[in-house]
Length: 192
Image 1: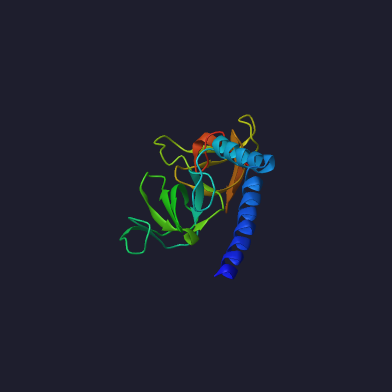
Image 2: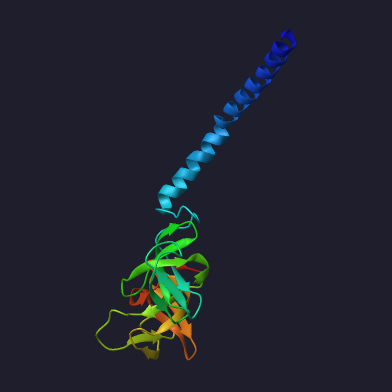
């Protein structure tokens, strides 16, 4: 019995010392500064997804020609509708584990499995527009020549946005379009 007590007493101080060292390290100025910087970064960039740490909301695109959109974030939830065209831009509005709640250009929302989404940036030309076509310019300047007139709903790839203009292209067209005339990029967003 005495030997057992001695052994316990020898173990406790070492456990207490380890706990004290861990506490000191956690309270160190370096650890505190790191936590403060992480919190400052998170507050400056807005909300982020719990699963990815990426900004919410953000734009992505549909990866495949057939993507099920579900009413909830599991395969047990019913299919609300099906995307039948790869490349369409969607806005991620929430995350739950491996599922992303998305919104399309019409405002419809549902849940998509994360691997069905791509980081490739695409956009639709003024899907809300009722008036005529939108001009695609040769350079990011309205005084440059018009390369094409694009109808509302034309899908294209976005390569670079400076906050006012985006390079917008696909098969058959390549030029610059005013950023506010695209659904798939935020006003003022910069993309390299």
